[in-house]
Image (cartoon, rainbow, N blue to C red; front, side, top):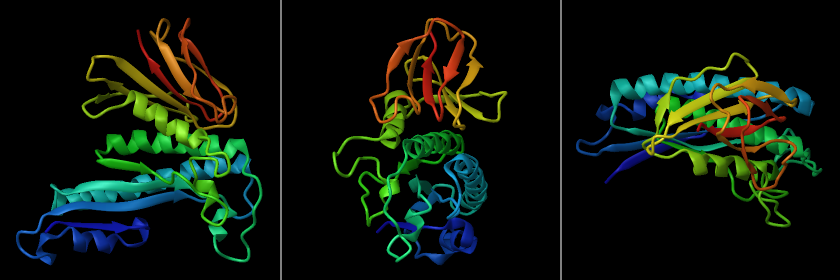
Length: 261
């Protein structure tokens, strides 16, 4: 018999991890395979989309502090247990009223999908640095009545949205065995994550956390390639382009992966 446990709101129940991860609280010989928990960024009911770009990333940073706390408990009590953040996503202010009379049904703007995709990429980068084993994006199909703002597909047409394409970019470019290397952005509005791939390629993901275009400089980028999504690409397949300069323009809520030459 093997044991795993999941908790939806880890920040509210730190004592759960102290209890579950302590082998003394389980029968002898039963391995503690996984502990898992969720994270959703949720804005205030009257919060504008312009404000949500700040709220979502601030909530993500608070969650990362919780993860560090849980990881310290895990390493102290049960270091062989793996960690799975098995639901990561965002919920619109309307979606937070799921199943209540207050829930409304209105079109979800494109900028929300791109912001949500950028947030997932940011958490993928930071949770990877913390050694988290599994980082699952939630959910493939939502629809009115079932958290539509968490969907990765258009529930009418079945077409992928920007949340789906953000995940696809990560799957295309980052793999088990890649070595995370030091990276730093001079702009608080831009996040950088770099790896040396198993094939020896130098690869850097840059995430624009804001709803405006930002230009960055990435040494030795000229001659490389960029796969990206932003507000302009919307729900379309991420384009791939050849870079002719070390200066790179990041569109609103861009998730861009640059492979250096």
